[in-house]
Length: 501
Image (cartoon, rainbow, N blue to C red; front, side):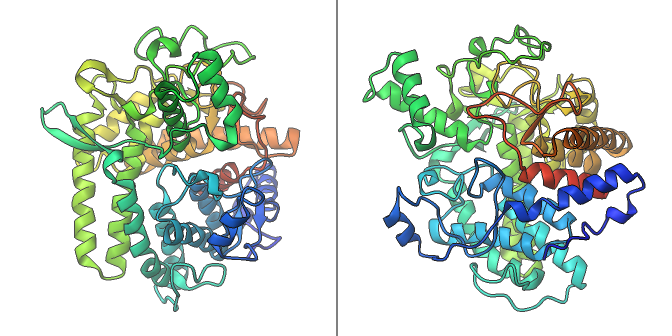
């Protein structure tokens, strides 16, 4: 349902340069589209591996760009956001239904649509993506929804909001069951002294990542001196794969404090916030992802619970709606008890065991994800504290919101700014931060769009990540691969901000 004259809101943009930018970004969608697989047989796909490791999906897919030839789980939410801004509801529904198809056939949404990703997922955003499409259909049709099909049907051909909601609900419950398996839930004693159930990431593998086999083996054997069959090597590989599941691969969040080289609780590491060249990436030998209770993951789980409740209510399943309302309330309370830091006015990652370790040191953009997810719903004063906290955090730079203040050389650290973090920070401030939050949200969104647009005019590309220090000067750096262009979630967030702000 892409059209050349989109997006629909472009004509209302006063500035000609930004109007042209919006249309240029909208024009990128066809280049990222991939036709459905000619075979929907997952068994056939596995039989052809490793020659063909792609997991087939029934609807048109949107890939991130360049090196990425398959869809990725959490990227897909911001692709959906952008497609909806472009007026492409059918395409957005197809993306959501592809993820539902993966749950139907695999029991969860893997990291990406490749068989070698079947041992890990990514931040859970499926329920939010489904609800976004459902509400877009309802807004368009006034609630007059058509007939759907099973979890693999519809999409790309309409079906309407209620049909998608009905198809999705049992599959969202199946994904939730996967996300709350025993190995993914830990009991943490909160500030109240009460043990609370909290989520963590957990990859179901203790082997090197197939897509980064050489790097993982070298880390364990050459840098750490482990035997390839040792328990130490296997434990390290699980931690690395779990960091990949977090979507933040890699970040100083997952490293011991000495390795991350942080000087104080909220300060900048000795790598500094300066200099153009990124430092050599800090070693991953101290990685401890499974020992972290991530504030953002628990926020995403809260968002999932709230969205499932909303979807259930839309289709008249009051039992599920009330169950997930209660779970969302309990999650918000647990996050207040375990992750909230009164002294710094934000949620924070917790290191296990909590009494011995406490919070992960330093400030991260991910600390503010829970605001978007509704974690301040039980105490709105927390949202106002977040507004003050992020404004004074040092994360807000001329080109957007830096991932952290630690200059480690890892791509999810300073000075890189990423579209999904920009979006959730802005939307959280706008929705829950009162007048000051709305003002700050607009400031950040404007900076982000201006930076994206300036670099687009220079390079002709949208980028995977951006350097927050110098708006429009360069894309972000670091990581295990050359910085990528395309780029699905960057396109989506730029279009969403252009439409709203």
